[in-house]
Length: 95
Image 1 (tube, rainbow, N blue to C red):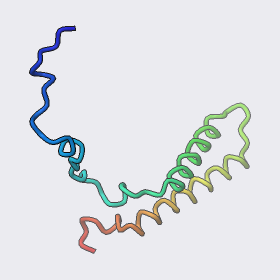
Image 2 (image 1 turned 90 degrees about the vertical axis):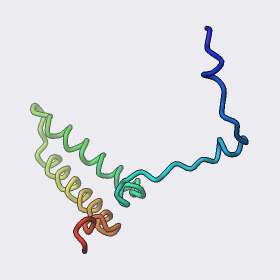
Image 3 (image 1 turned 180 degrees about the vertical axis):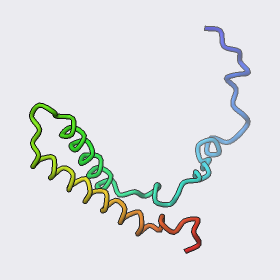
Image 4 (image 1 turned 45 degrees about the vertical axis):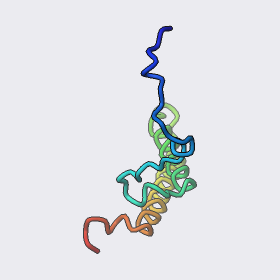
């Protein structure tokens, strides 16, 4: 493969300058940066289970479906509580 040498040359800089270049923080809400992984996992698992049970038409277990709906609601509330604790509810409202 014939690659032009200009494309492979690095600018004149010390190696530590090339490695230690911090990127600016993305413009994300604070809540998205430090989200609790266990809450996110709980919500995702509850949603997946609820979807699976809602799509089972032949062998629908209404008790399991009701339990899955309750767990999804509880997981959603736990996630919302975490987001509120991080202050997401007050962004852009001046609260």
